[in-house]
Length: 317
Image (cartoon, rainbow, N blue to C red; front, side, top):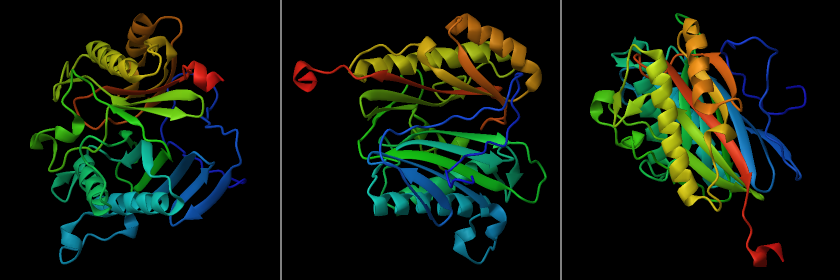
């Protein structure tokens, strides 16, 4: 922070023993940093990373104004509008990945679950800026952190964007999140299951937050081991789609760096054992305590991997 580097502080407890960790995105080129509204950002010629924190207390729930939008809905719409404005100004048109962290994500207020309020605000901003809400949407996750009952509910968001269009990937085992039926809220979530991006001489795969969902339904609602296994089956299906589109089909479970969001810390040992069974000794994972977007989901897993591009002979020349 002293250097002005945008830093996303995830307000979640790390569950396994070890020192604090920091995930760092490196650039080999000239880097420029700045601030636009609530966004602190850095970019090189190809990629921009930004972070913002918006307290919901900045926004008022007034039934006579703003179409009855809740404070969280207004904060989300404001945040995403700021992102789109910045990207338009600096000419980074393509969004790769969002990380969204929301206090009390499963709680209800103003007659609606807070995750559903977030989805309303997010889609409002996409539509206001002429962005697609079906198909051409970025990878993302949305998790809850433990400030239950706090008057301060900061919406915390980070994002990666660039100047090369990503390939957005869906999972054939699941209905696309942006096509969920209304039982999951008045607006569908606006994200793809993964994004495959060419960054320099690498292909980078961003796997969105993934859980034990087949079709659109939660499976194994009370069995954390079965949920872990189903989640990894979904990630394997996403990898198969990514390999179909990649220049060289070689993404596998052992390649990935995992962030595992665990609802109940007591489940950690069972989750770690099952992940080790699925991935093997190459498992690279960080475990954080978090609330997941559905009450019956006991964990969610996101992941990232990169491979060098397969160059043609003309490119090598």
